[in-house]
Image (tube, rainbow over all chains, first blue to last red; front, top):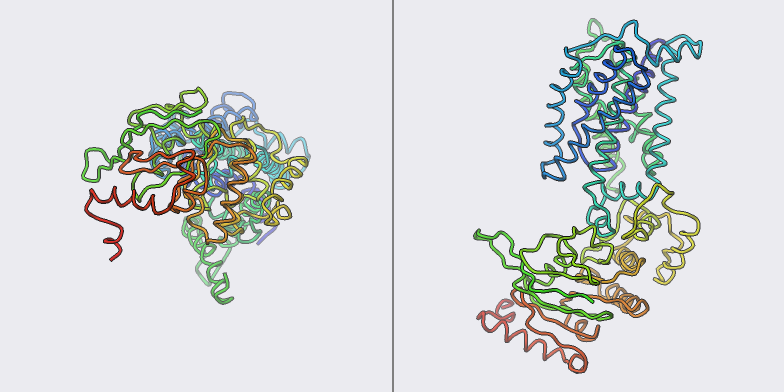
Length: 298
Length: 264
C-alpha cells in the first residue's frame, strides 16, 4: 500500500467518521437499528451542495445538513414511538422517502461542487499543507470534537437517561423519563451526525449524488464492529473512540483489499459491498471462534 | 392519601382471550398505610399495581394521588410520585450502567434532568452512605457494572433506588418471589426498615401468606378482578394463616376446583 493510498484511506475514514458515530449512537447506545442513514447521508450531501452552489458558506452548509438530518431521524423516531411502527420498518420508510426528497432538493440526480468554496479548500489554504495531508487532519479534528461532545453528553444527567433507554426502558420510565422523547431526539441526533458526514463527503469529493448513500449502514456497522473488536468497548468513552478508529481501520482494510492482486485476479470497487459484508461476518464470528478455541470459558 | 374509584380494565376485549383483569376496584389508602395484597394467580393483583403505576390506560375509573387526578397521566409522569420494585430483579436496574450511575438516575426521579454532570463528588459520598445501610459492601463498588451483581444485590439496589427520593407511594410487586429464601428475607427486612424510617405509604403484592399477615397494617385479597377481603387494625393483628387459607378455599369452592385438586 502506498502512503498516498494510506492518506486516502485516513481521509475517507474520518470523512465517514461522523456517520459511524451516529450509527454507534443508534445501534449500540439506543439499541435502535436505524436504516435512515442510507437516506440521511445523501440528504446531508444534497443540502450542502445546494447551499454551497448558491454561494453561501460551506460551514453553513454543514450546519444546515445537520439540521435536515436531525429532522429525518426525528421522523423515524416519531413513526416508531408515536405510531408504533417497528423500528426497522420505520427507518426504511424514511430512507425511501428521502430518495425522492433528495431529488427535489437538488432538482436533479447529482450536483457538482467544482470551483466552489469548500471547507476542504479553506483549510488547505489556511494550513499551507498539501491537500492529501490537510484534508485528513481537518476531518480528524471535526470528528474529535464530535467524539468529545458525545462523551461529555453521555456523562450528563440527560446522557444517563439516553444510556438507560437503550438498556432498560422499564427502569428509566419508572425513574420518570419519557423514553419516546429520548428516542426521537436520539435518532435525530444520530442522523444529524450522518448528514453532516454526507456534507463533508460531498465537499471533499466535489459532488453530491442521490445514490451515494447505498450501503452506508453496512459500512457504518462494519466500522463499529471492527472498532469494538480491535479497540474494545469497556466504557462509553472508549467505545466512541473505538468506533471512530474503526471507521479509519475499515477504510484502510478496504484500500488494502482493493490493492490486492492474486495472479491475474484483482478486486474492483464494485466488489466493495461483498468485501464489506464478509468483513462484518468475520468480525461477528471472530469473538465466537476465539471463545471456542479458548475452551468453554465464558 | 390515595383514592382509587371503580377501576376497570379488560384485555383482548371481544375476543376469545378476553380477560376482565380489574372489575370495578375501589380502594382508599391513608398516608402511612402499608397494605399487603394477596390472591390467586390471575386475580388481578399485578394488574392493579400496574394500573396505579400507569402502565396502561384504564377502561374506566379514577385514580387520585395526593389530591391530583393522575388517571390520564402517562407512566413516566406518575413516576414522580411512585417508587416501584418488580418481581424480576433485572427490571429495576440498568445492567450496562454502574451502581453509581443507577443511583444518580434514581436521584433525579420526578425532577428535570439537565446537561450538568451526572455524578458529582458529593453525590458519591451520599451514595456510599446509603449503600452502607444495605450491608452488602456495595459502597466499595460504586463503579462496578450493575450487570455483574447477583439478583439479591440488584433487588436491594432497586429498593434503595425506589426510595432514594421519598416516593408518595411505594409499589412492591412480589419483589422477593424470584430470590432464594435467605436473600428474600433480607430484602423483606430492608423493606420494613425503609418503610418505617421514611414513614412510607406502600402496597405489596405477595404469595406468601405469612408475609401478608406479619407485614403491614392492612391486608386485602383479590379475586377475579375484585377486592373480596379487606382487613385492618386489630383484626389483622389477630389473623392466622389458617383463616386466610379457609377464605381462599371458600372462594375457590364456587369454581369447583381447589388447589388440592389441581395439585393431585
